[in-house]
Image 1 (tube, rainbow, N blue to C red):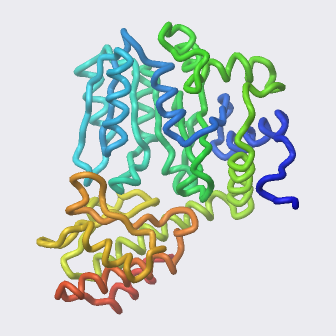
Image 2 (image 1 turned 30 degrees about the vertical axis):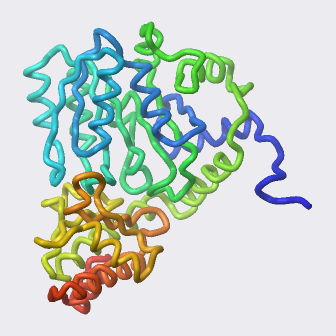
Image 3 (image 1 turned 135 degrees about the vertical axis):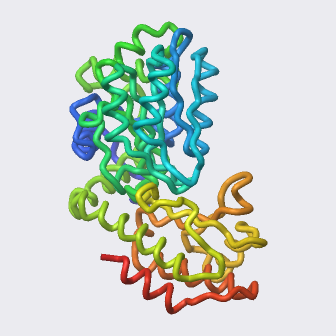
Length: 366
């Protein structure tokens, strides 16, 4: 018996290339776009290992857990790493990047996360990119969470390596990702004797076997289901309009922040300034004496499908995440999450205003 998920015609090289072209249009880039056959950690690690090595001096910006991981990879590659860590309740500024360059003019690589879904902040990449471009460093950007929720413009911002994933704001699969690569980045990789070759991590393999050959022969069999799902989610964004999709995420973030503030019970935004808050996830600080992970568990007991999670690691005690991205960037998901959190707080004897939270969230959705 035929099965729509199993009995698929082979994905041709031309079809694969057409999906890359649609991703490039989504990013507004003329750079090469390579779709990688794995979750976004694949191009995130592959790009660092290709472009960094002994002799590299990297400014690694840490505004959440992924920045810490990038620093580990850079050190493992033999790079000299200068960490610029800012509190997770805020964002890094272009001035801080400029100051780091002034103190360490030898910096030739900058790694940054655009939106940190794990901590709920987002960084001003356009302003930072201007500073990085003026200094001449190679600019590596993790835009996995931000793409689809806010502008991601590698060419306009001077980003040399821009990694995206489909599983968050794009509303697509987790098993496929992409990276846009500038000519400067390709040259840096080609000059790096430690860049992965003949490896699943290798971007240079894709360039030499795929791009340089005119994208006529794929290096290996593509992940068909994931590629078709990626194509479908890009088509959906195209149909709705990127501005419409981004506006929906911005409304979800504003509504969650306003509703949580009105809810009471000691709940408050984790990211202090709304301008620093990511449109993909709103993080909240649990009330004093309340363990965030326990509160989330109780809220999820009301509805396990709610987009709620506790912070990772040590943040599990104090941080609550409302992950309003993709299919959950809706009024219903926001209102249901606030209601469940309010019920869980009320169970602990804390005073909450569910009606006020509902009104505040609805008023903020404009």
